[in-house]
Image (cartoon, rainbow, N blue to C red; front, side, top):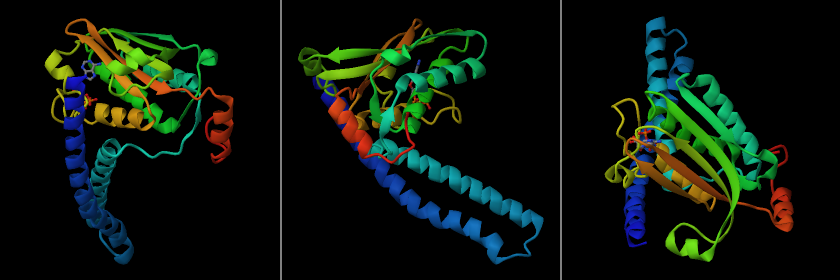
Length: 263
Ligand code: ADP
């Protein structure tokens, strides 16, 4: 628990630093972006080449703004539109994407009993992003092929367990495990994976923001993540999301939500 507290403090100060930078960067990028978008309208007889250059400028400013958004989303947690999410359906979608885009050398196994799983209150887009981050990392860890396993089940976290994990509170959860048989992580790497900008991938391949964003999102929903890994054996990420299985709570949550979201 001691080391968990230290790690949490380190993450928090990194988060504060990153969000300060992100805010300043946002103030710089916004006028660049709006100018790049407005100039072609103000100057109707700009030549083709200048228009192309402005498009380039707009594209870069947009990418910068996206990065800023990503940094802010992990630093202060996300405030998405929450709705009742059937995580099973969402996970099967993710499995479908993996099956159609991952190399054939990666076998994909899924055990997701959609109708047995409890529901959670979250923004489906954010959860989708979380699972995509995790399966893309799994793919990147299995360049020589391997097996990706996605499972989901209902679990109960008891007081005893909660005492040992800083982020876990006792209660009913949905546990989603994403396991790979890839390269695995050393204890030194494992210790830093949730830090913003920490990456072992080549320059240009990884931003190091995937897992920090993922953790930010899951913490924002009152959940937590555990990781197990062995060098040369593979890794398993387990995402725990608190269930809303209380009928009363479910009805209240649904009545407060805009119609048409979730299922
Ligand atoms: P990125 O993917 O851009 O590097 P992440 O925050 O998603 O950023 O991951 C940080 C680092 O954690 C990765 O660079 C990699 O070293 C390690 N990592 C994450 N997932 C796995 C995995 N499934 N197997 C091995 N290493 C992993």
